[in-house]
Length: 181
Image 1: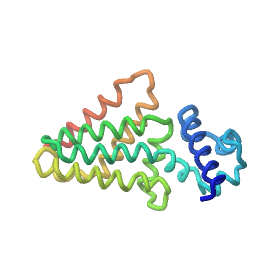
Image 2: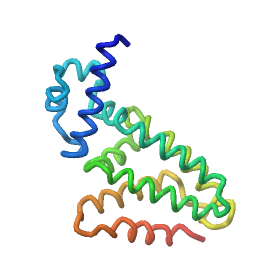
Image 3: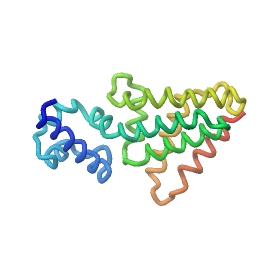
Image 4: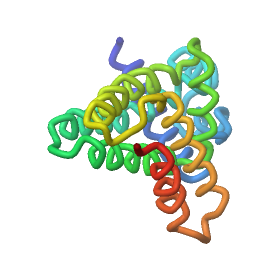
């Protein structure tokens, strides 16, 4: 990438991160381009659609979640490790208004650019889930796809109820009671 293109790319990411934090993932792409000092065509050259931009913005968080899953894979209590990781997923999905909804839809669309976030998380979570199932702590019929959809649904519910900061944790606790053996 040329130096000017790299600068534009980085500026777009920084502005998009701020815009998503302030306005949610539905922030106007035209506004992001304008605030980054580029035209909308430049934004689309770097990020062909909203999900591609979201994927790029959230790569740092995904990297952190993947690193955390590797640490937790060595934990003495596989079920507690899975629960801790799912809590981190709920926290991540709740960081930006609209992210949980986008992640839920991306899980059903393998062509979505957000699948680049979703697929590695699914693999990491599957390893943690398998350990918990092999330890006899989680039912065998529980799938990582179901758990990720539930965590995104919990994050979405919490997003809709900002006056109840404990809602996500309560819902996750209820959900996890249902998957234990």
